[in-house]
View 1 (cartoon, rainbow, N blue to C red):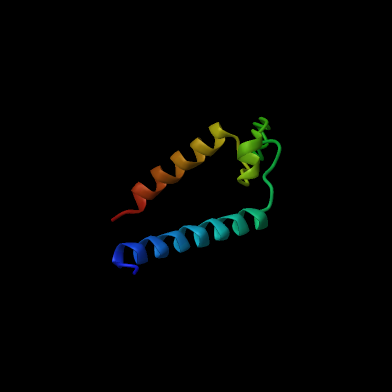
View 2: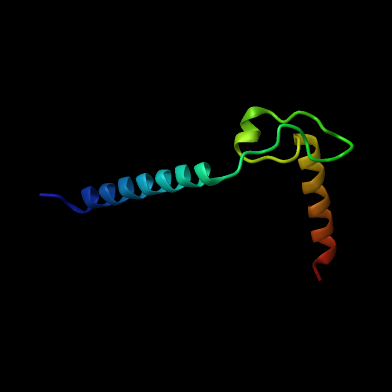
Length: 78
């Protein structure tokens, strides 16, 4: 006879399966990234793994973009 722990394990397994299915569906529908950085003055090659994730910037340009965004967000807080 199943108890509460068995029930929670079943719920957890279904949740993990649903999450993995949703992630696979999202990955399949995501457009592929660029082969080279979209910054005109950079044009560095983007690694295949980042390309699969939909990257449009190389690591250095992405970090600079994030840094700029964080800097501007700090000034917008009031």
